[in-house]
Image (cartoon, rainbow, N blue to C red; front, top):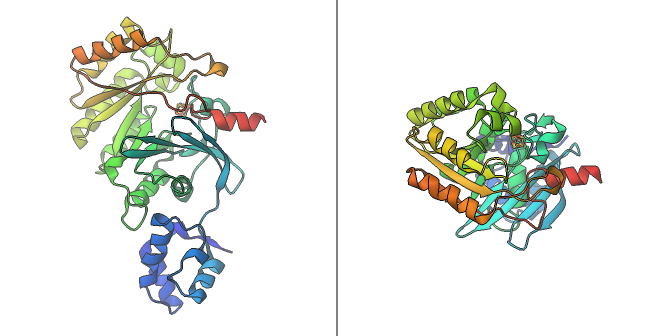
Length: 341
Ligand code: SF4
């Protein structure tokens, strides 16, 4: 049976090649073809002998998943529905912006956290992705524009699939693998406190982002049930601790939803919990309108007031545009639609 070649390290492949009587030098060439040049099968590896290509083909495969559907937005955002080897569906998004191309990738099939604004959380968790399935997402996305940044903000809670996500990150970061710098890789969590503590010990240079979306326990628990288990006071203490141990900034994602978390009291609450953090930044994102979930963004003035209030409190803020409004850009929307069909 063919094995997934992405499970191997360069050294492991070198040992296999040695056993076949081939030069170990070819291991790096094979990795280069897969991770840098985007080869989908061994026959494309033109600097290897025909015999070696056939032997590799007989023993290994490169991709076990493929693109089931693609949506292209007028703003350049591309959303992909990916079908895994067992027919499970996940989503990944390519977001081009000035000087960078971000790949937003999934870490699980479904999600158990059931955030009310998120289509991915509506049908529960099916399974974790393996590290090689995570790598495949990037290889599939890389076939168009070259991905320069990775964010684990697609379907699933990455810190609930801790070991596989970290294994994937090491391969994404490795010069023999995809070769994306650690500082260009972001893990986004809904606030799984024990895993944040564990991540702080890893000595990785990756970015951490917290999906906050409300600074009041009642509102946050209403839209993110995880808050009942890990309420704001404990979450902020975990963030304090993370910053102290890593000396790295945490980004707080705050999607502004009309009538829910965008009024004066909400911004006051937000400023109050973030001010004590030495290294914190807020990404404000007016929500995409999601008809099925009755979600609408607030008006422009409300958004600007919210932003200015935080700036006046000395908090670093970036106002992001919601992208791909003409496609099913909100997490899980495309998969939900496809499942219904
Ligand atoms: S927002 Fe993230 S944590 Fe919440 S349900 Fe969706 S995928 Fe899960």
